[in-house]
Each structure stands twice: as structure tokens, then as C-alpha cells.
Amino acid sequence: MEAASRMTLCGICKQKRVCCAAVVWCTECHNGLCSECKNNHDVSMTNHSIITVEAYLNLPPFIKSLPLVCKEHNKKLEKYCCDHITPLCLLCNDKYHGCCAAAVVDLDSMIPNIKSSPAIENIGIKLKEIVGILQKLKLDRSENLLKLGEDKKKIKYEIELFRKNINDEIDKYMLDVDLAVEKTKKEIDQLLGNIVKRENQILELSEGITEIKCYATHLQIFLGTKKLEKTIDSTENFVYSIINSNSLDEISIQFDNELSLTIPKIDFNKYITVSTTRQPTLKEFMPPNLKQVQAPILNDTKVTLNHQFKIKKESKNLAISGLCVMNHNDIVFADSNSDRLIIHDKNGSFKFDFCTEQENSFDITPLDNVTVAVTSGDDEIYIVDLYDKKVSKTLKTKDTCYGVKYSDGAMIFTVKEKGIRKISMSDFKSKYIYKNNISWGSYITTFGGNVCFTNRELHTVTLIDSAQNIIWTFSDKNVLQQPYGVTSDSHGNFYVAGYRSNNVVKISHDGKGGVEVINHGSNIDCHLRAISYVKQTKQLMLRLLGVVMPDAAVITTVAGVTTAPASTSPATTAPLTTAPLTTIANGNGGGGE
Image 1 (cartoon, rainbow, N blue to C red):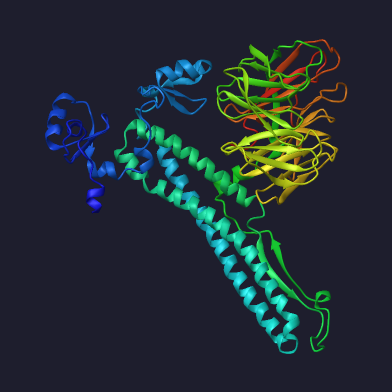
Image 2: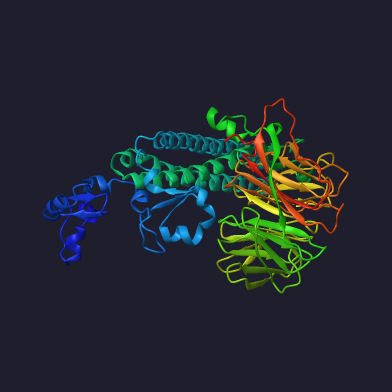
């Protein structure tokens, strides 16, 4: 039965409506061949490579499922865009990647030596390292579960000693123990489930490395390598989010009493409690080569000017409150003083603008290559099609919404005085994922499943997890005042625009440190609001509005974020003196790639 399920039919015979088992697989034709067809194929296709059907079947499923022709145009993949990390056919290159000419290369030039490249070996090593980390995490949580069981048994024994005299009074404390343990067990079980899922995924990928190297085509190895790298990045971020949160705290329960239970009538709530405690773990889970990525050094950051360009301006009251960069590198600005969206290309050249015919716009986030979501600063969110230049859908939020971020198929946005809501883009159902009093004008971003938001009234930046727990809150008025826009880099560091402090502050992934990376001083009011980190190009983009020349053109400035020696103070761009600016910075964010 197993042999039948793994049988591969001859592709040529199948076209003739004849069922015949293949004995070999042609890696160029991507087809199985029976003995007879193989002989004909060997004569006509002398330069094609052939492997056994068994070897083909042993290739990992994700390698065999890699598309080798363009899904949209059914054409051969001949190009590769390094900016977007994706293979292209010639039609896709002309249609979608006209602005990526410098980053588009021939696939044939990238794959000849891929089997001898160290990339596949390095990925195999990384996969094993990640499996080791996941196994350590799984063991740690399993040991904590065992300890919880021992704590439960010990405390229940103590309670049983009191039960002889006051059985009815003590029953509720037995229940408290079960509830305390069950709540914590559920938390750990959920985390274990996620860890095991990731472990199984990485193990499956790791087991196929040898077969990939031996039997996969150059193109398959190249595309597979890129897919493996994405999976590794995702899993590393998952590991970092566990380690950098309180998920690995040592959890235990206690039973405290301060009296001798010989008196039958007594208020036990005054003397006895059942509670859980969390103690941050001191264990090491990350190998040395990955720990460096886990803890970026803030003091090694400096910003250097890259370039600047003018934004098309039709009135003196232009106010850019939101900006985003599309996958094809177009830059979209939202003007909160009008109903306009302004679009420039990645080099700063104006492309077009148009009115949404709504009251105004506040923040903006991309949904796909041509669609963005725009919050109104009121009770509506607009879905805008940039290709057709129209509002394709209007969502009523019932609450005043400000900062918005698209993540994992849903829009997450801040709601004035109420918290943070999430709208699924599949069915447009919404729910609160965090309830608290958030000031108007709060911005939001995400990283590793966590949500980071600003509060201009309290001068704070807060990171929460998916369970509404506050991971950390950053507050330092000496460094950051009236934070507005917030964005994150690839290492979990957060960049915040200080509206009143006229600066950009980089906050570490653990919230324990913050340092200025852009400071324009007190001689000019920059009105910093919109900010965005572009992970593909490692650029930090923000818009600076000067007041010396109110009728001057708005300018976009691009500056680079790079790593400096530890003894070097963070460099800053020169103060603004004559015109409004929008700043864009590129670099690795000091994270240590």
C-alpha cells in the first residue's frame, strides 16, 4: 500500500492516457520517465540530468512544491529580485519591478555553484542549532511543569493536616491551588505547543538537507535556500520573543499561614493565601554566536545623511502624519490636514496624489503591493487602492482611531481612551486585544507577535504581548518627550519620533535603554510624527517640519543608520535651518547582522 502511494507515473505516458510507473526523474523536464521513454529521452535530451524516482521522492516536500514557473504568467523563472527576495519571469520583471533594475539579476548567474556554496551547509548548521534551542526550551518548561506538580503535592499535604479540624473552611484553599496551577499549566502548555510545532517544522527541514544537496537541482537549491532562510529568521524571532519576555520565568506556588489552626471559627483569608510567583530564569538557551544578535548594543548607533527630496506641496498647511513604503518601494504619505495621499517613488520623484474624498487621514499601513489602510483620526478606516486611485472600502470603527499597523492578516490600531483593537481582513470582525486609557494620537507597531504603542500624554512607549501583559514601559523625559510615530527594525529595537523633544530615540528590545539617533536641538520645532523603518533596505524614514520658512517646500532626507565603535558617541544629522524635512535613514540598526 505504501509503495503504491509513493508510485510516480511516467509523464509522457500519462499524456497518452497510459498509466506506466516511472523509473527515473528528469530534473530539467520535471517529469517522471518509464524505461521506454527514458531511452528516447536520453537520445533527444543529452544535457538533462536524471535521478532515480526514489531519490526524487526522498526530497523534502517543500523543495518538490517550489514553483519553477511563474504562477501568474506560466513563464519560466529567469530573473531574481534581490530587493524583494523573489524569482521573476520576464513579464513580472517588466510589470512589477521596473524600479528594481539595479537589484534584478539573471537566475542563471546565481545558481551554477550553489551546491558547492557554504550557504546550504550554514543553513544545515543553523537548523540544528535552532532545534537544540527549541529542545532546551521544551525541557525547561517540562521541568517547570514537574516542579509545579511537586509544589502542588507538598502544599496539598500541608493543607490536609489542617483539614482534620476545619475541613469545611479549608476546602476553598484546595480549589485555589488547583486553579493557580491550572492557570499556569495552561500558559506553559500553550508555549510548549508552539515550541513543539516550531521544533517539528525545523526538524523536518533539517532532515532533508542531505537529499537537497545530493539530488535537488541548482534552481531548487537556490529557491529552497531562500525559503529556509526565511523560516530560520521567523523561528529565530520566535525564540527571541520567548527569551526576551517573561515566558521563561520560574513559576511556583506558595502556601503561607500565620496561625495555629486549632480554633474552629476563624477568618482564614487574613492569614492564608495561595498564589503564584515568577522568577526570571538565569539559564542560558542561546549559543554564543546567536546571543550577539539577541542583545544589540544601543551605544554603537550613528546616523549619517544619505539623500533628501521634495514632497509635492499644494498648500502651506501640509501636515504629514503618516507614511509607509510599499513592497515595490513607492513611498506613500498621508496628509492629516487634507484628504490627500501623496505618492513618490523610492528615489524621491513625485508620481501622483489624489483625494480620498473623506474628511482627513492620520496614519497609513500597506496591505499588499497596491492597497493601503488609512485611519481617519475619527471613527473610520479607509481601504485605498493606489492602482485605481480610489477608496475601495470604508470600515466603521465606532471609536476614534489613530495609529495603525497591518500584521498577520489583520489591522491593529489604537483607539482613543479605550485601548487597541484588531480587525481581521478575512471577515472584518473586530475585537479589543488591549484595554486601557490611551491618549489621542498614539501610534503603533508590531514585532515577534508583540505590540508596541506610544502615549504622548504620559511620554511613554509600551510593549505588550498577545495576552495583554505589559512586557515593558519606557519612560525618560530627559531623552523622549511626546512620542508619536514608532517603528521596529529586524532585531526588535524600536525607533520613536519625539514630537516635543525634536529627536528620534532608539529603544532596545528589552526596553531597558534608549539613545538618541537623530537630534535637531531646540532652535527649531521639527514636529516629528511619522516614522518608518524599511527592513528590505535598512532605511529609517521620517518627516521633519521646520518653521523658519513656513512657505518652503517640504523635503525628504535619507540618512544611514550604521554601527560605530563602542567609544564613539552617536552621531546626528545637522540641525534644520531653512526648510521642512522628511528624513530617511538606512543601515542595520546597530543590531549586528
